[in-house]
Image (tube, rainbow, N blue to C red; front, side, top):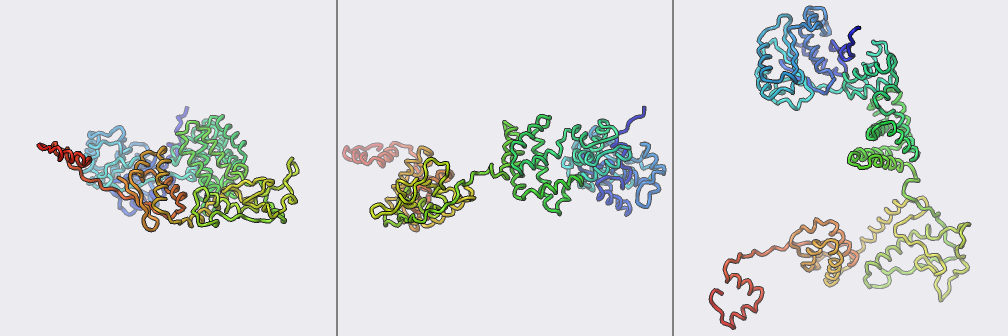
Length: 613
């Protein structure tokens, strides 16, 4: 039986031109060889499976080749190349630092450096996983690495550059190997499949390339695994079943259901995914990737960021046309929050279902906040629209907080009432609305109005913040109401006296001390005073009370509503505590007691008490 060689070894690159995905590095090394500007030490760093050791071997073979080609590749025919291919070269040494990381191992390597090469021009030492060397081994290696013989070259390879001491880094030329792109891996897999006579679908190879996460060695290992599973034909279905990968169709179906607001379908699809043994968190991460691909597909200039096949790229472009940019951004935010909080959630499935329902609510009017159901109707033409004067116009008397709220509500409802107050008579209503002939105005009984309806008229729903008409959402109505509130509050600049301020201040401390005793204790210790330009000066022992933001907000709202002024400013002043003199003698104690109670001084005088006092 013939020995099987894995694809990662069988198709390992033997020349610079066959290295996959590292063209910038291979070009630099070839130019250094051509110009005879090779450094004495190189450091190849990067993730696993990207070609660090492979490039080190190719470089060692090339610089010792006796008859290099015009393209500066090894000829594979000279004595040095044949010895290298047969693993019998005495000019190239490979050391695994993971198992040879002591000082003695480095000293043995230094002793070998003294022997010149027998064939070729250079002796090359390749130290793999160099970050595994001990600190003492690094220090023992410094001098040789900095000033080796002219024929000695060192190539260090590592996946964790940050673990190498700076003195080693400063003596090397550093080459950072990048992750191999999905397209490059897929093309190399296509070459391997055709060389082995295997019929593989492009989508299947693309999934393998994505699963490899930028490592070509991992991709070739997965490819061998799929060959063992599927034989000479590798299909997309076999790959997703064997590698436990969610099909793209699930994500396309999920987005279609979200756009249509089909909450039941998307929940059933999630149940189907979980019943097949997939981890729900994989669906969360895959959904984020899918939404991101849709976002970059909106612009033809960014479609090149998609690391997918051409057929799948077209599907992304088609579905992205049905998605609004705002929807994709909000959906990505929801998915990102779901991903962040997934591990800490107790009910993970419910956490994911809520996130999907939130996405559905972005596109489904039925899941949004309820909108006004009443249609705007016109009041009868023969009903006079008389309005009562607002409390603000009744006289100079200052308004209370409740009267101000009623006045504001009346003003707001007077503006919006012609569109929403009168309900449209319905044919299925048992009690029809009163007709206008029973509501004629008279001299003794004023005509019904918006602010003062008659007893026969159904009382309208007086909502300060509500729907202003058909087709306007509650959110829009809230924003409009807030704008009106801002306009009204800008006119609250009524002057107030010291007595009004103290009364309002004491009322707040009595009401709020149940909620925050410490906060109200700091405010009630001193009496506030009215200053110029509506300034309210009050003394406190320290400013720690300002950390209670809820208390400060409640205080400002209370003063605003009771004083009818929102232009005031709170000016706290920290009281300086007097320096207390330490009490040592009985006389000091008496002086302190007499200061607090002057009657003691009178008693001392009348009784003629002397001595220590």
